[in-house]
Image 1 (spheres, rainbow, N blue to C red):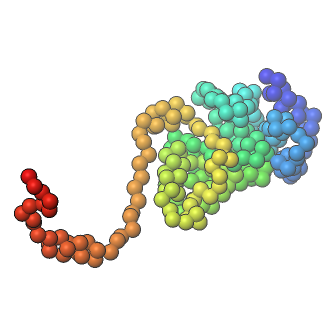
Image 2: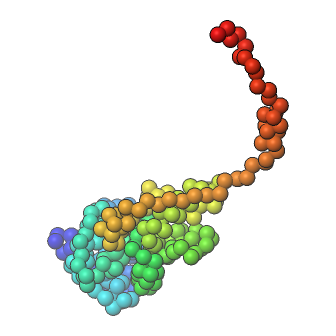
Image 3: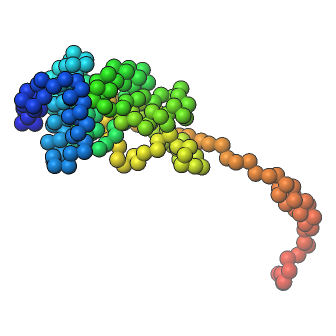
Length: 239
């Protein structure tokens, strides 16, 4: 609980009387501040997001949500019960990832949840200067390219996977929808048991059109084949 206590203290003693515009400025300055260690920077980011959530959503980050966010930042799994606020927990982890220089992909169980969560949290993200978006199957390439340029993208695990596979079928880098280095993007998986176990049993398979080839070559080969004559005996065959 040491980190949780620090978050509360930062909010109370450093950010208590800040306006939403001042919170945004403080939050954005964290990203470029090289004097603060990453762990401390993440705690400050969560404290500012906690304060912004009160202003914008009129919702408080509870300790269980702070613990969940800290686990996600460390790359761990956080088991949370229904009603403990996984959606808000995710926003705290996204805020920390942002100041640490990482974009975030949030993989949810279905497209309804992806769009709902992004639209619900968009005012909070906007107040902090975090660009958010969602990516769903009915969007075209240009819309997806804009969506993946955001700081945090909500989508389904399947759609994220298929977009990656489709990008590997294009002939030009400009045609890819996921333009950023995936090695620098953090992933947060909602309903991890469903996505990593149940849904993972079905492989993602994709096929693409092959370029058509001229048929003249096959006609020429056929004509040559028709001119061939069967030999009664192979050359130099003494048996």
